[in-house]
Image (cartoon, rainbow, N blue to C red; front, side, top):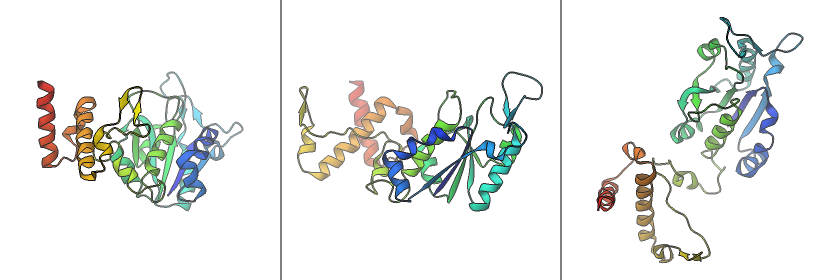
Length: 245
């Protein structure tokens, strides 16, 4: 997988791409992240990438020409790459998007600044628009980092275990179950006895019930579209009845 990032501040990516899972994956050549300064495709004495908006108003708008030239050049190397726009107006980025995008050969992230992009960038160059939440950031760099991290977890070999991505929160629409490690007792709180039992079937059933319980308590709206079996629904009915007592 090749991630190309178009930004005015490529240095923002230096440290995150050297650390932890992403850093190791890049060293092992399981993925590539190439950051590009949009000014490399700008023209004129000042290499301007923005201009005042037609019709007046506050702020500056990012010009379409440098972006178009940059995307065209990057697509010469990765013709099938999808162009993703980071914007508060985009579709909320979810786990299923991360899993689907991991199947692409390449992704080009457009990281905006100021008042955003000329609308013609959105209309002629972009394949999909994503938002990571209902809040405003100073630019698209942090959302791009978040998405690269989430997508990379689904690439073969990036995680230590092939099952790790499948048991994360949201992988099947539910929150993850509680996790424990040594010591068995901490501040008077003991690890649930079932986890010490060695009975893998009972442990698996307990973990699934905890997923359902935690989701019911914290994000009940997720249950409407989660992948639930008949046994899951029976457990949920029992949990709801217990809650009402």
